[in-house]
Amino acid sequence: MVFKSKIDIWMAAIFIIVPTLMIYGVITEPDIITIVVTIALIALLAILFFGTKYVIQDNKLIIHGGITKTNIDIAKIHSLRPSKNPFSAPAMSIDRIEITFDPDMQMTLVSPKDKETFVKKLLEINPSIKLIH
Image 1 (spheres, helix red, strand yellow):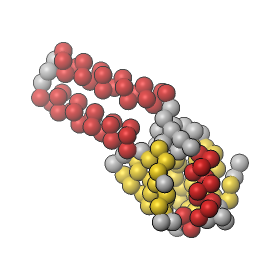
Image 2: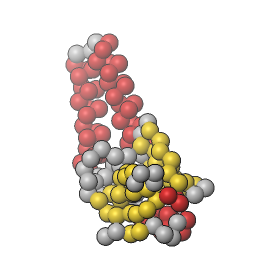
Image 3: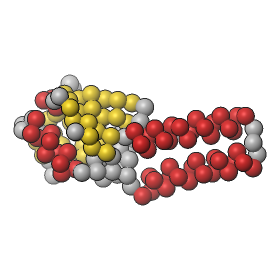
Image 4: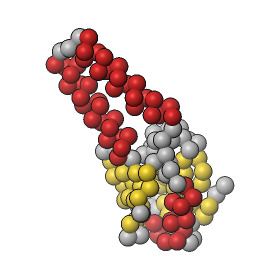
């Protein structure tokens, strides 16, 4: 099952304003470096914007964060808790879920659009996951 990332308005604004300003720069003062950097940045932003998603498949949580991909064995997830942590994460919203998992109690942040169904599906696979509020 695929869960798209929730996208905050301020994040969407960044993904619209930055490329628009860069395209304006290319139009007003075109040179090869500006064009290459603009194309590369727009491609990266598009990958992040459209490629951030979370897939639950075969007892795995696969986190697609733009150009990165992380696989977590759902049986090794210890806990889930709501988070507003602003640090870098494969999440397009500040309305996040903190996931702690083995080995070594690692942590990641995700922001599924449908948080309730996301948590329900994880609990169906691993009912021992603790929900921390």
